[in-house]
Picture 1: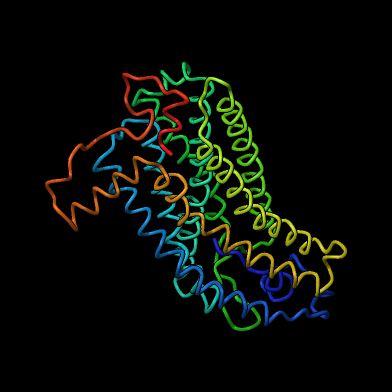
Picture 2: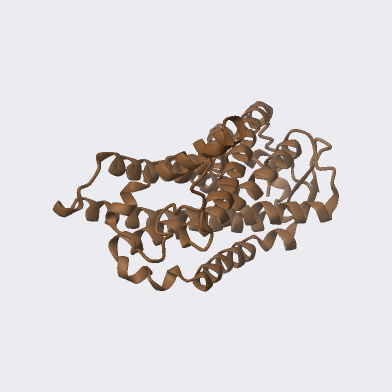
Length: 351
């Protein structure tokens, strides 16, 4: 769902009885912040939407055309691409809502908010699940034999989608279009307390996901640094990039969300107008960086792999060059050949 600034929540929301009249006398006008948010949101989201749609559709085409979808890794990549597309389709709606006003009604508000959050949470959970699978395949290779069964793959993916739907359920129950003092209507929570619940829920998801990802990739690096592992420096560098990118991409957004909650609680010094204004600027920038993950996931998790790059070349050559050269379909990406156990070497080969 849309993330409104603390200015809108603190001082403009007249339909919520959570705020007392004592705050109405101390107006903190943030027109410049809202103007900044509207401009950067329009420009940045437009670029993100284009690259996300193109990148994730290419991933889906390559997976369906060349890969074995019974593979656990390929199934996760497929679900991740679907999650990112669902997330992406909500971006233009929220950009329009923030810049202008909500015009689609209460039912559409609930539905769009729910679908968007399903894409948001499922993307993070699938990234974390993929990391756990890679960790098990490299550090405990014998333990992934059971996970290679199609049934296990379907069950795991289903659990992730169900968990994502449960996490997004508050949007079906508590969101609506709310009227503001500037005669605009926005799709958000009717009660600010539910917005706080969502904030802390997103913070919790980030902290847990980052802890799991950092632990798994640390163990993978330790395994790769063993004397008999023949570690490639390129592989180590890419693993570090993935962890750093996840942290730098999501940390500022989650920190800004948490700081905005402190503004809502009127804790010092966040009850000061200049401080809350700075928090709003940090929030806008952090949100743009975090929400760009849907366009960058195909690059970091798919197209940087050697086999995916080869598939992409074959696909482009098929439509732009000689179709006769498009062969060797349904080759494995990694861990997809059931007859071969995954090893450290196979993990490195994808890079």
